[in-house]
Image (cartoon, rainbow, N blue to C red):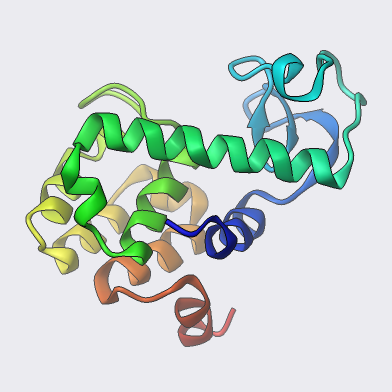
Length: 169
């Protein structure tokens, strides 16, 4: 899995904020969507990000992003074993992006694991149904463009850049 092709996708969807802020859920966040309550920065940066306004450099934001991608891949590999590794890179990127956005979650209840029909379709190689399941969700209504782009990547096995071009983004 190539982080260099995934990073621009996550940066487009999450943005880059070098000063800590409260996200729409009131969670202290910094960098490329890093929830610093659930994932503190002390070990990686040698200091805590503990309040709104605390800042990091661009390089530190990219370090946190790289580590967050690694964690998402580890979560997906732990959950789906070889099934995740067998997916094409664009489809892996879709699942990583969704996991990054909402967390791995709890099967049938929260996060990516709440998308049981989509995941069943994905791992059964029924990508049109997987894309449909993605778009037929509350999540898709919340993240609109992101869901449209990711569902296209899933259905047609398109890279992020090719999907963006096709959608005119």
